[in-house]
Image (cartoon, rainbow, N blue to C red):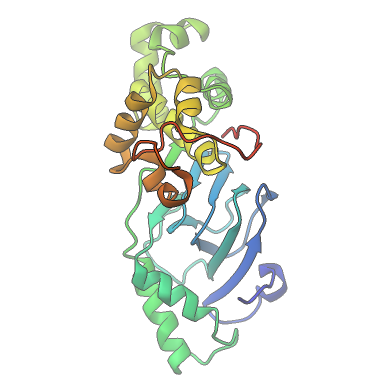
Length: 282
């Protein structure tokens, strides 16, 4: 793995550069930005990325697109072997101007791994150049995953959303929020959808599920996380998670095989923590 900082090689003229780095559990990268766009992926660990616009959670085997110039804060949950592709701002047409969590196919993952073995200053008309050109085309096909949570731009509603992320609960209601910020229920629902792109109920559910992922990845049992979020029981949380993401929590995070002890259900509902790690907040 080529362990270099992008700022040391940013002026290399090639349109796409591949770099890698291993980060330990709980490692934090303070707010920063890159001149190039960045596509990241990791086979292990969970990455929580925060920007002024929202929070994004990247489970293992997925990817995240960070547009050029985006200020972002990064937190690692578990050991993360990060693979990064840094692209010139105009190198990959059609990429979003907002952060996105994306699907990474086995083919794309193998391309990213192979790119780390190429020289940084590859010839554009060589095999290395052809591989990077294929990567450029594959980047344009990455499917967007529902693992982001957008915030309002400013004002009391933005502050309320950020407070909710610190202590998410499925029991908070439209009336609670509209009263707190001094708005009618009708005006609040219109404003909330306009600012976040989701209804209040959908945003609240998304916030709860995304905040659960880093905690589960850090070793907390499903039961503890579900009850903290206000679900009546872990089964209700698992059902909601499956509806949103297509798999139960531990399977989605790739933890089923190594988190579920003998004698528990397939979703690991009763799996103990045993790791002594603190609760993670989004």
